[in-house]
Image 1: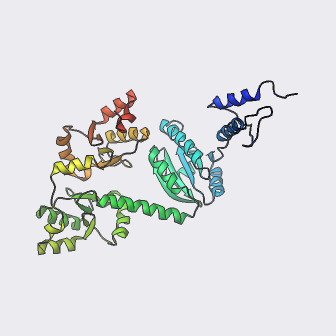
Image 2 (image 1 turned 180 degrees about the vertical axis):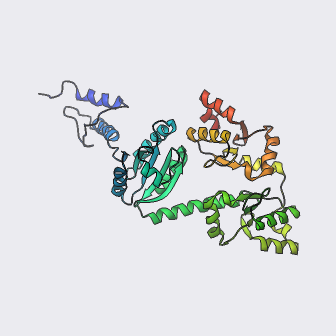
Image 3 (image 1 turned 135 degrees about the vertical axis):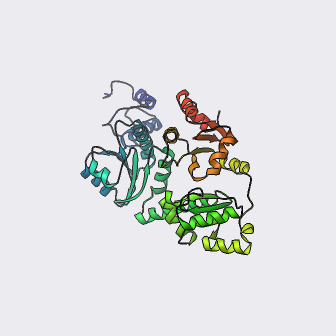
Length: 380
């Protein structure tokens, strides 16, 4: 006599049609066949569904410091991702959904949700000042962090760090990532100057002198303020094997510092060393096509320097589409020239595949209409 009041084949089919099963106590071995059902494949699929819904032991919540420390200890050398969140922040809820998907893909990584205000001793220890903030641990050590609701960046960091190994291996991976960024920066323009401050407002005597020399010899250059990014400031010293600033690069190769530039100027070789100046229009066209989605803003995606820029960054982060930024405060020529190039007088300005989309108001309208993602992907 069957113990089941209805067809097991029907039961299997019903389970397969449910995408939001709430069962928390039924576990079946993957190879188990339901009694009375001859469809082994069907039963196996049911089992996988049940396991997928129940086997989320790597997505947990810590409500005390002791729980938090216990999760880190249990993970050992495997990656632990801690999401410092707040129930009142909608972007935290959205990022929790991203974490849930990542937890399915990375079974050996532990994902911890922690209310930042409920466990202040942990938040203060790791200098969490805003939510969402993600801190990455290996072997109990902090190896990386991500501030803000940026799903693509979170995914990249998890994929990079979710390998079994020591914190030293994670540090090596982080160095490789920084070197890729440095290579991109020194090739951002034919002539790149890494300095303290900007050409308009140099913040040390050496930087002021090298800017004056380049202008005197009509060398067109872009610049990067090393005081705005400590990772770049320290990393470039090792990357270039040059311990001081300013540093001048031509076509991605290190020229040298102030003394070298002075010697080249005195010998008449500076103009030949640095590439010929390109027109501003050509430079702007290159910049707006630098990435499929380019945002020209005040500051960068990690540290916006005005309210409008901060708002548009939050919208783009929540869209899930990757993008690059250009800080107009670092380059006055670009800041003024792009207004004319785009016939758009204000910032921020968003470009997709080299085409101007608009500013904050346009992006907000696209978000409200549901068209933003398709526009960012160049589909409409």
